[in-house]
Amino acid sequence: MTHTIPHPRHAPVAAPTAGQPYEYHRRPLVEPDWTRFPGWRHVTRDQWESAQWQRVNCVKNIKQLRTVLGDLIDDSFYTDLEADQKALATMSMLVPPQMINTMVPFAPLTTEALLADPIRRYMIPVASDRRTDWPSHPYASRDSLHEHDMWVAEGLTHRYPTKVLAELLSTCPQYCGHCTRMDLVGNSTPAVDKLKLTLKPVERYDAHIAYLKAHPGVRDVVVSGGDVANVPWRNLESYLMRLLELETVRDIRLATKALMGLPQHWLQPDVVEGLERVARTAARRGVNLAIHTHVNHAQSLTPLVAKAAQTALDVGVRDVRNQGVLMRGVNAATPELLDLCFALQGEAGILPYYFYMCDMIPNAEHWRVPVWHAQQLQHDIMGYLPGYATPRIVCDVPFVGKRWVHMLTDYDRERGISYWTKNYRTSIESADLEALNKRYAYYDPIDTLPDGGQQWWTDHRDD
Ligand code: SF4
Image 1 (cartoon, rainbow, N blue to C red):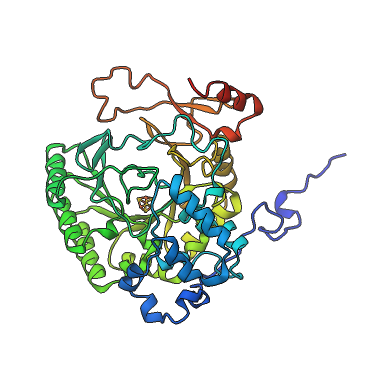
Image 2 (cartoon, helix red, strand yellow):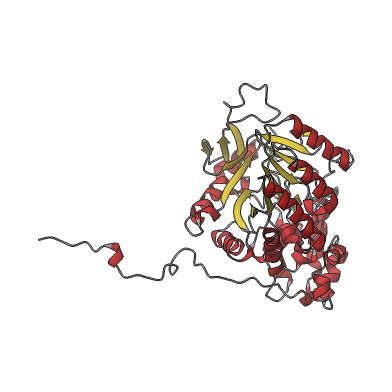
């Protein structure tokens, strides 16, 4: 007697998204109503869509935040915020109205809701967010990626063989609590005295161009800061056109979180016209010009952000890509990551490209996730998005660079130490014959370790 095994194609078919670990639902973008904030009750659409109004009305201190939020939020919140700013914050406060408007966007604004909000958790950190047992990892440091150590000219980091990072300035239209360049970017805080750029901008730009001319092996320039949205457009255009005169430069990426945090900037007619001139020149010379932005949560995506991204594409920018940062309390869960990726890809015209693990800067342990968690997230987001739009989760390993989170060579889960290798020398290792044979360590947050591992770090706290 023979048995017939039913072919899967003949099995009853369920709706493909039903019963899956993640269920996709298309959600069109919505601009939250800013007039729900007492301080912006009378702000008109014209004001809201003006880059100048947004910049003038950025929230820079607690007094201004109180004016915006009125009496909706308890005093305890401001006390908590003040405690953070006085002793723990590595970034000063600067939040455009556009970003505040994406906090608690569609529910009553209460103290509890604000405390739990993912955008608030990284843009307006409060002392009670941070860990008290291990606020910083013992190996955390300012300039944890050693970008400053690898400067070959002021603001020009040469870390990878064919790529450089050009920091044109040290300010942004918004300051993120977890900024990896906390060493340089923004105003000094009680906890961090910032490094200062010393050259005049024109001298800095000349030094970058001179280095690139002298190093034809560098083909890819990430033009960053800070945020290029704070470079006066005329200066930025001149810098980009000078890059485009170098036949050796084949990729240019503009780093701007403001595409999301202050989309009004990228919609100003003079900026759009200038971007079109640069994009045309790039296309004529066969250079890939892209914008890289930094969105960490689907809440941040609104119709204005989508319009700014689409406008850049319309004027000839080849691609707009997202590099988010993975953070506990913000997005370190599969539904949050997939919701964000689908909103980026399907609604905003922005390619989900990378999620970086939060770097080992001081006072960031409450945000950081362990490598095993990042690996699990990478596993869990596979297969839902188009392959080309499935972001890679990467660990930026000090002295190594970006590595996909599954590329580690060894992993001590008890003590939370992963080991990584590399296949190129950074600019400070040209004479180090052993650089490619070494293993480089990255450290998980101690509170995520098993008891034995936590005890080991406690025993070695003062080593
Ligand atoms: S926009 Fe980028 S550089 Fe500026 S504060 Fe945020 S993370 Fe740092």
